[in-house]
Image (spheres, rainbow, N blue to C red):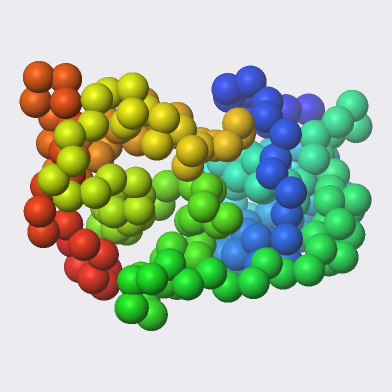
Length: 201
């Protein structure tokens, strides 16, 4: 048997809701691997064979589905996480949150990556990542205010749940690197002209 390649220590997936599941399985490749496991594939290698994918690609997709909570790993290998899926089906969808950007495309982007005032994950694409980080800077820091590093850490930590994919230190580094915060002599300021206005970076 070819087990799923080990990565970082396992973290329990965050609770699924129906939109999460739709987004997870909307990708055709992930849907094929999910179907292969549904039909009896118990390892990444078997999922690759049944879905027609290369073994490495199938292993990566399996890991994404396990991390996303649609599949589970156990003594018998891969299985569909039916309990989590039933729970997602019963959970009411969270109401849409107006992030106050005034731009429909940006609102849709933020709805995917920011929920309940917490960061779900960062986008892979840098233009979108920049937009989400800009939103975090805009909601966390005022113009013309000098913030010591401890205050910056406290404000950014509020965006990170225990299972968040990034911590406040990583967020702080991104914000400085992308110019959403300026750092000088251990003091941070939000530069002028950094508002969320659409998806253009």
